[in-house]
Each structure stands twice: as C-alpha cells, then as structure tokens.
Length: 292
Image 1 (tube, rainbow, N blue to C red):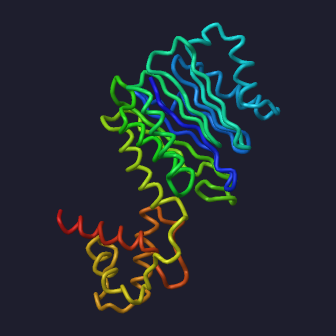
Image 2 (tube, rainbow, N blue to C red; image 1 turned 120 degrees about the vertical axis):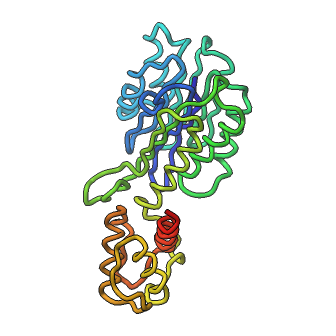
Image 3 (cartoon, helix red, strand yellow; image 1 turned 180 degrees about the vertical axis):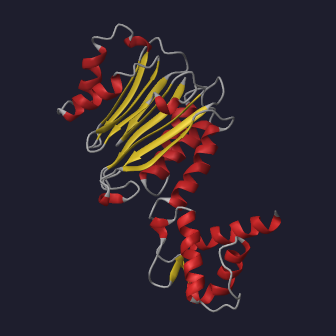
C-alpha cells in the first residue's frame, strides 16, 4: 500500500524517512526515526511495534539486518510485512514478505533503502533510487526527489491519498540547540488528491519560514530597496509613514513587525540586509493584497 525511502547523511548526521500511499495519514504509521540511531519504515500489513523495537535494537548495537530478522522470527505475519531500515552509520537493510501484494520489493544502497508494495511495477523503486543518488543538496532534498520520482513512475497502483516526510538533525529544529530540538523537517499530508506535490509545496513554505539554509549571496541591501519595502508594507497595512524610499526607523519597525507576524523570527538580520527569499515573499504578499 506504500512506497518509502529511509536514509542517512553521515556527514550532517541527518536521518529521515519519506513515504506516500493510498492510505489515510500514512505518516502516522510508517516512519520511525531516532537521532543518532536510525530510521525505519514499517509498511504493507504494518506492524507498528516494529518501528520502535527496531530502533531499540539498533541503539543496542544490533545491525539493521539482525534487528529485523530477530523481530520477524517471532512475528507470525512476517510474510505480510515490509520494512526498510538504515542505521546512523549508513548500513541499510530491507525485507519484503512473500505475501505482500504485488508489485512488492525493495532496493538497498549506500546509506539508504527504498521499498514498496501494491506498486505499478519495479520502475517505481528504480526511479526512487536513481533520483536519490543523483539529486544534489541535503538529505531532505534527496528524499523529496526520490518520493516525487516514485510518484511519477506510477507509485501505488490503487491511487494517491497521503504522504509524509521527517528528517532529524542535531539542533536542527525550530529554535535550534537553544531549545534542544532535532526535528529539522516534519510534515504530513493526510488526505489529498495529489499528496506528494502538496508535501513539496508545504516543504517550500517550511523552508521559507523555518530553515536557515539560504544562499549567502541571495541578499538585498535594505537602503537600496527601501522604496519597494515601504510600498509593500503600506499595501499590507504595516507602514503608515511617507513612502519616500528613505530607510527610516518606522520602516524598520514595520518590517520587523511583518516578519514576526509571518513567523520569520529565524530570518531576521541585524546587518542592514534582508534575505532575498523574504524580500520576494514580501513583494508577492503585497501584490496579492492589491489584487483583492
């Protein structure tokens, strides 16, 4: 009922799972991740106990293969199970039971595994593996590329309904190490006609709002764009002063308020510059407000 990928970036210590299915809220059942330990996707006739139990065994120095085989040896429905596992060291293992509904299979590579059942064919997994291996960027970019490739190759042969992605990174969550959190990306689409593309849309908003990974060169000097910023903030109701193009205190205060209201705390700067992504979003918001 599902196609998924588990993977690790050993350099950044990211661990993650991405999954899609013709199943309500697949993100509530399939992905299990523990920082510094591993990532698990348990699917087909999913045994939800397998996720935390595999992670427990990995944390106690079991290999992915040994962990899975140990648990399935006492599971009387093991031939209906499918599971993909990767540990923090990059060792991957997958299992597909003989009674999983066709097409069912898996492919394990360096630091990742893709697996699926009730698929349109083996090309789904092949496309996912290729996309993962050839996509540049962080683990989250590679996982989303793999999921999209699997979706475009046919995905679940019953149709589409839900998708999810979770990536953990040390100090990677909102607030960073100050809050001691590690959920770098955590998004779900529980019921949608096009869940994978909706997940990608949500990630773009997450990236804009939460992630601090902008291109260092993608900045604008506030004094140089003060007129456009004033016009945009005025259109949105934040700026009440003269639209003169002079970067005054009132403009800075209005911009700070707009950024706080839009949850851009992570993107505020104190060097007289504005991230290009935030600048473009501000202009887009103002343009939309003027059309209403």
